[in-house]
Image (cartoon, rainbow, N blue to C red; front, side):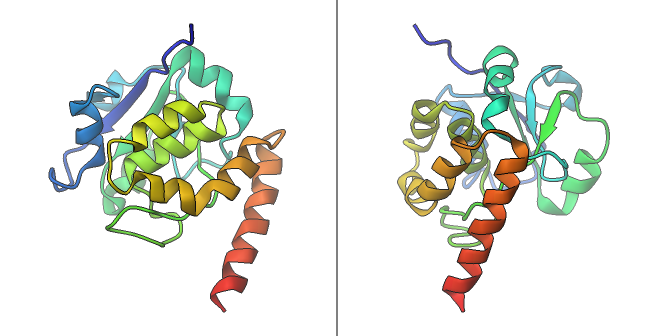
Length: 178
């Protein structure tokens, strides 16, 4: 029997509740929401866009043992929240394209559920990633837009290799837009 990944979201209540993917994940029982940073699990992997270390398959064991954390706050306030002391092991996600209706097609502008699903996929929890996205009408779109990238990152040996793949994917995206 596979152990379920513990997912915790720090929810800053700075978003539109009707569009908030974190709240919908909570309503469906996929995540636990916490109102304060101090309630985050100590050794979990924290998705932090300001981290200097990219998430890689090597983080899978830590996610399985200690959980995965997302920080749901507005981008305007993210830096002040995330540059302070964040419990856990911070990791940034590599280059991905948003599939959500608000930021469709925009690089790196992922919703909370997209970030969590990407982290799970890369760390080897592909079924759990698909389950999270399945409650959103547009969830499959995120996977379709990013499958090559997600599978590439998931097959990387370490964080450095993820960063190299990211450079390749970014160059190809810029070439396709030109």
